[in-house]
Amino acid sequence: MKIKLAKLDNKEFRAFGILAVLMLLIAFINGTPFLFGDSFGYFHVGKVFTTQGVYPSSDVPDYYPYTGHAVGYFNEEYITPYSVGQGILWIPFLFVSSIFDNGTVFDNYYKAFNGHSLADGLAVLLAACTASYLGIIFTYLFLKELGFSKRRSFFVTLMVFLSLYLISYTFEQPGYSHVYEFFAYSGLLYSLLKCLSTKRALFLYIASIFAGLLVLIRVVDVVLIIPILALAVYRIRSKRPLLISAVILTVFALIFLLYNYLSYGNAFTVGYNLSSNQSGISLGINIFNLLFSDTRGLFIWSPLILLSVIGLVWYSLKSKTAILIFLLPSILLLAVYNFWSNWWAGVSAGQRFFIVLTPLFALGIAYLLEKIKYKSVIKAAVLITTFYSLIVGVLYRVTPILSVANDFRLPEPSRTTPAEEDYRVSDLFRYHYRLLTQSGGVQNYLNNLTGSLNGGRSLILLTLGATDPLVKVEAISSQEYRVHFIPSNTQKNITTNTFVVFASDNIVKSYVIPNMNYKYYSVIAIKCDAQLNCNSSDIDLVKAQTDITELELINVSYNIKMYIYGESTKLNFINRKLK
Image 1 (tube, rainbow, N blue to C red):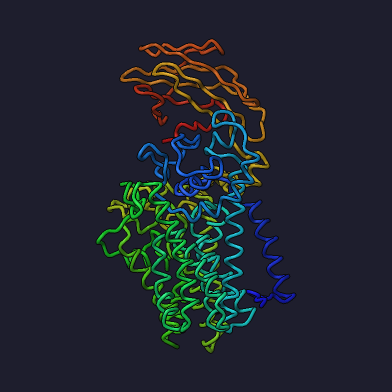
Image 2 (image 1 turned 180 degrees about the vertical axis):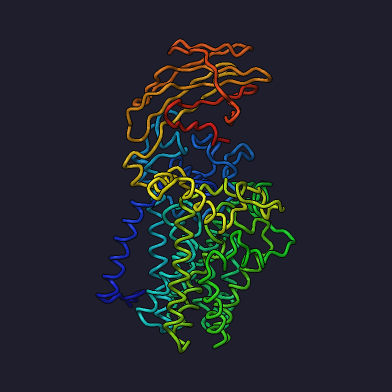
């Protein structure tokens, strides 16, 4: 028998078609084809499997110096502490991007800048857009299945999507796991409702696939499926569907255990246990911080969700089933993150740990709009709170967030470790007020925003050439170096005096490369003696006097620090961002 998951009418089809075009447009205007932080862990799994057909590998990845804590060396293998689900979802995208992979981290602009190719970055961006788009559709269908109108289902889905900064995790930080959690959980809830309403086992099997995928993406989300499993065992009397669902879940469990065994040598070892830099369980009480802190508190960054929680609790009181599959999972997830040592979620927009609950938050708003007599008041509150989060999201995009904490913190203990991650909503507004007043006018303020971008240049800015040349130092020995000069991605014709500063113990010496041209890739060799008397057979290296007080000297070999900068143009000294 043919069973359709969902049938969209012409209006719905057009609405989601327009949404697809709009998302592609936003991806071009604001999408960043770059990986950051945790993203490299998920990328590592998919990339190694795509290029080598196995995981893990003892071969050091070219992008390894860019990965921070996301990729480590363990038992003579390069592994990640992050789970495997997202890497699996990325494999088809990375397989296609591998066809266009070329250049190295020393001569390709994108690889030199961030360790991976432009094609890989575009693949990740497309994967995030796809997951978000499907998550929106599943959330819409979930609400419609519960009896809400098409217009209301579409409206509240988009409002919650925007309020939870999913637009940021889709386009600006596409490598994080949250859009994939959103996709899997919304698919799970919709399939579960279809199973309950149609009594067809196929939807139970689909729900089981989504449940297994959800846990593979983020292990702590197992608390979201435990109540659903309890409901399935209680409500489904036929043993055969339960047995098949158990087999499906077992397959996902075996993938998880096999991944742990291959990565860490023990099927029951979770990656977080292997790194002191990773989040873990603590005995603190962080509920207030999670919900009300100016530092990533859910209700402060996303005030719409406070209304949503009221509606969700109200709806859940309708039946024991609603309490079990809607309210209880939310409470369990809150309990888990209450004991999460990294409750502020590192460097992130909003409180990203609860993005997975997007369909439940949408349910809460939909129910409020249905039950409250003064619907225009609730709708106005929804629009105002969503607009507030949109403004905060825009400010976040154009704020150097890791510096504002130091700029605006009062003499009080930091709420986060490291302290630079203690940036708050108020800091974003204060930063831009200061930037506006110091710019001397709106036009200068807007011009200064490109220097404040957080998350890398978007596709449109890359296309327009709003990038700077790169410089990367490769240490051949403790006193011999290769300096790679990499032009901007559009190969702008830039010529400037380039200063090279060396420091060792109490010795500091500076040199200038006169009229260095950055239109084409070039590389020079530099040799230094113990007194930092340096020379090059490739170019003129002239001794110079420079002020190093403002320079962040970087270790480039065992006992040598170095810094390179342009006299009349900005250069990205890539060694500053490497391990």
